[in-house]
Length: 183
Image (cartoon, rainbow, N blue to C red; front, top):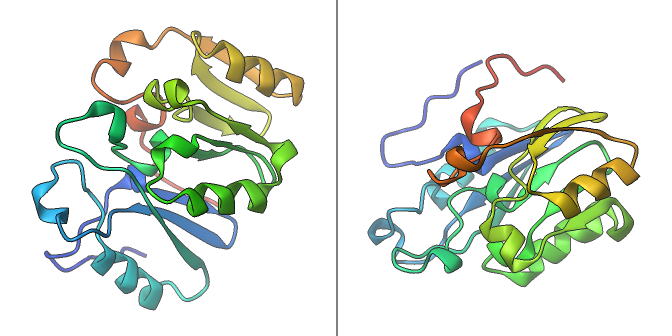
C-alpha cells in the first residue's frame, strides 16, 4: 500500500534502505533542521513510520549535514550506506554524525562482510552503487578498491564511467527508481 505523510513530515527515497525485517532511515535530528537545505528526512516522519509499519523495525541513522562544507555533508543515507545481500554492506562511517550508528551497522553485518569506506570514498559516494542482485552490482569504474573487494567476495561488478552524473551529487542508486519492490 501507499503511505501518505502529512505535509510537515519529510522523507526522501535516498534516505530509506529496506533490508529484510529492517528499514534503515537516514535522518537529521538537530534543532537547525529547517535551515539546512540538505536535511531531507525529519524525526516526525520516523515516528510516524514506526506506527504505520509494525512488521518492520525502523532504525534511524543520523547523517552529517552542512550548507557550507561539502566534506561535512551527506545528502542521503545511500551516500554512506548500501546493503548488498543479507550479510554484506558498504559503509562509509564519515557520512554519519554519530560514530555509534556506523559501528552499529558494522557490527550488524560483521566486520568481514563490510566494505568500510575512507573519508575520500565517502565524498566520492562510493556506497551509491546499483545492486542488481547479491551477485551483480553496477559500480563506478573509478571505485577500484570497492570493485576489487566486491569481486573478492564473488560478486560480478559491471563497471560504468559515471563521472558526469557524480557532478550532480548523485550516482547509481540516485538515478534509478524501483517501481516495484518484492521481498
